[in-house]
Image (cartoon, rainbow, N blue to C red; front, side, top):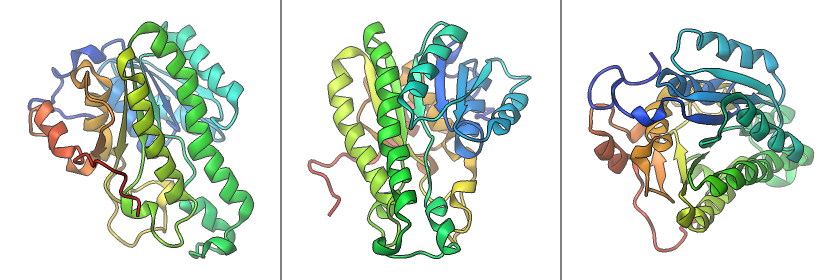
Length: 281
């Protein structure tokens, strides 16, 4: 099972997910794979994308063979604007709609550190090409995918955009550039987009694990016991369902989500309190 099996968030929760069309970028592995499978388990039809490893998409699809919802795969790179438009067109052709977008695809700090043998280095020693690629993927790519899907959502008067982020400590941690700063930019964009889309039935929220997670992106980055990659599954169900209507501009922490609580109580407990002003510095 990929989602809660008992209690108020069990199989009878979130009936609006049945038939809902969702795009999950970076859905071939790790957190993206787990969220896609959890959504499909509840009846959502999910398009998953990957920029490079097409075989990982097929592996995810194989895991979904017995689930209620369908998973369709597409090799696409969010850095490419045409690929973003193609992903939305593919979802419309496969499932007839695009109701939700989960922006999970990203380059992590482990990718940047491959050129230093895994060592953390100050910004002036960072590989400049990989720095630029990380920012292009995590910031520009996420914008391009959101704009492509968001245009359709605004037109239909309904949509969910969920941007996968990281802890605020990671954003300003030394020798964690450009990954941390790219996620700070993502959260700033999310806050603005939530205000812009609020009157059009489209919500924009941020979801983060709450710590280093056991995925390829974070291998060797943290010495702490990692969180399981499915840590955000219960939260993503609520964020993509009708239950989250009216809740926008929020920042939710997956590890703080109480799977035994009623959905609204779990969301309240996992939502970081709002601040009047940004707290980057």
